[in-house]
Amino acid sequence: NIFKKHSKQGDPATCEVQTMNQILDQLNTSENASLQLFTLLALFCTLISIFGLYSISSSNMGQRKKEIAVRKVMGASAGTIVKMFFREYLVIVLIANLLALPLAWLFMQNWLQQYAYRSSISAWMYILIIFVTVILIIGTVLYQTIRAARTNPAEVIKSE
Image 1 (cartoon, rainbow, N blue to C red):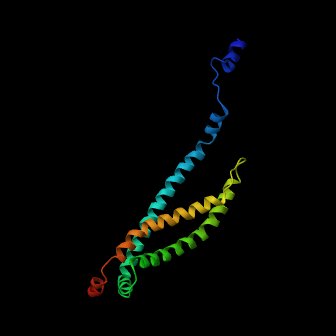
Image 2 (image 1 turned 180 degrees about the vertical axis):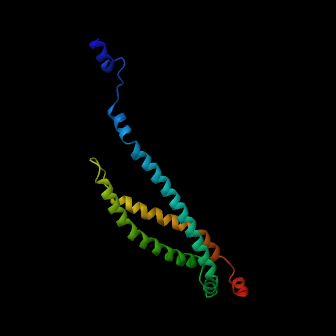
Image 3 (image 1 turned 60 degrees about the vertical axis):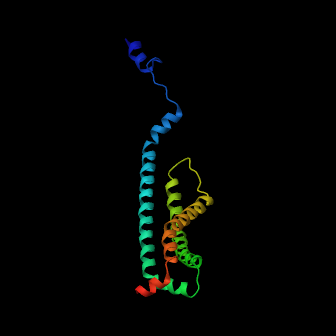
């Protein structure tokens, strides 16, 4: 009776063998769920910020139609006007990154301290973040600036 009682618990035929990776995967299920949630939230925040930036640039172009028209009459090319607006938005993006990236670094360092095995955050990751934000800004503002730079200045000045 004692043998039967203990053989059910440790019998190789009924015992389930797990690898270390399976055990670690089970322990990390909450971390994986958090990662998926943060990824989804980051995508939503990025999308909302792109829409906000698009509306701000659209409003800015609408308010500065006359300025753009006067610049074109005075001889400015469409490329010069586009560069002027990109420079304005890029300065804002770089200032925002200079404020946000150190805070993100502090947050990530504190968060990673709770793990025994941690990976380091390299400088190239921050450079990649700056590059991606600049590309997003250029992609968002590009249509508005090109449309504003190609408008006929005579129509703008005549209508206002």
